[in-house]
Image (cartoon, rainbow, N blue to C red; front, side, top):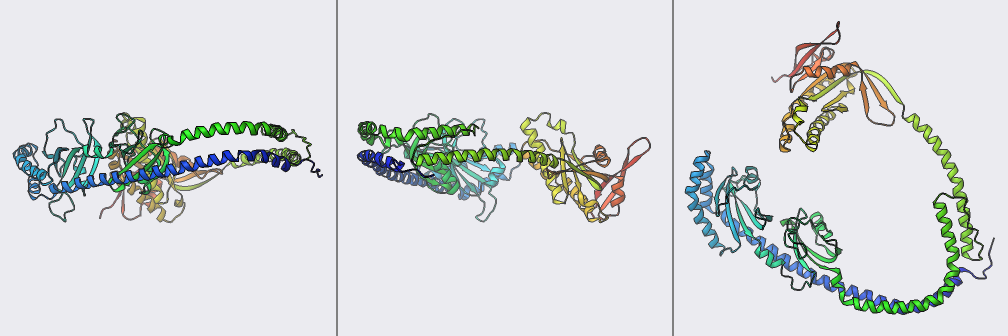
Length: 585
């Protein structure tokens, strides 16, 4: 059906556009305001970019000069001779006396170091540490000193000079410069390290000078842990307490690039900022200024534009009111009908009979509602079919075969975890069970499940007369026992108790249950139960096996088998239990 074009929608819109054209003047003013903002933003960004470049270069130059200065100590032959002499002493009492005796010799060289660099007003302490992590010299003695730097592993790990800002125990920031000291230039292990601690006065002079940054601008440093390490203009005590996770920080430490633009700062305030990424130093310098302050000069112009816009809107609104009513009534009716359909009422129809494009839209809308109603009925029918198919998918299929089943269990796990927290207990079991499961998978085994502190697994390829799958089982078990050293190293690193465990293995009929909706098999039967029960007969860190498995693999070369006991299956049946060892010859 076609409608006559007595009053079409396009004619209504054209009529409305004639009135709206009056607002062109206001649009011109708005555009002028917009471009003024752009120009002002570009000027401020150029200023911030210049500040971040200059201040960043100054910070980098300061760090580089500190690194060059400390290398004077690292290359001093007298200091190296003193370190070698003290490193050779193992007795702590003798070493303490010798350190006191050699202090004056160290002091002479350190004073020479200060003279060489022309003095250092910020200098707080100079420390020389031996390769065993013990202090050999302190320019200023500190009582009850316990520093993470004085550690043997740390000394061996320092291979190149570096500098960083840390928070001292006195709550003040320190610029710490560290350099390894090598006996000979080509040595790969240092004989000690030198640490120079200074205050951050020079860095603060660079960053706290806020000339050219207005009332809200600031410059500060953030380290690779996304922690602010210099003073904030707005938050007291921010260094090493305020996290700064902004786009400029992420761009530096993720992509090693500078970032310039508008974003939310650590106060969740909109700012304009520029960064200087010093990735090699583990730092990024940020120069930022609040967005409100940047655009303050044009706010007065904005207020005048708003007043003018209000006057023009009133005039145009009064003229367009009648036409808007003609357009809005059918559209509102369409909206209400759409809301009812969204609420589940598919019987609604608009029945708009206007002779324009809205009338045609209404007719199409009613047809759409009717088709949706028909489709909903079909979807409901299909859901019933899907539910029936889902019940079929949840059925189990079962079969039985002869497999080699194994069980690895921690010795005295309850006692070991009694004093651990929930998090530590989870980490304890995670390290052990994940390590065991990884080894099982490498040798073709299938992990069924973990039972508390134990792991149940089997070797599916052992349902054969071929000895290779059984040899893989033996290799897997020996690898699991040998991995105890590495597992306990990880436990020690996490400050967890060391672990001992025992492995048992049996061979016989096993029922395997396969769930159609899952990729994980489950096994059960007398063979599985026997494997778990004889596990307690094994000594810590050994492998034992049942008699049926022994008879199967007793001729495998490279292993010795020793009968250690018998397990009573019932009053009439007993099962021999054998200890398995790998031959070393």
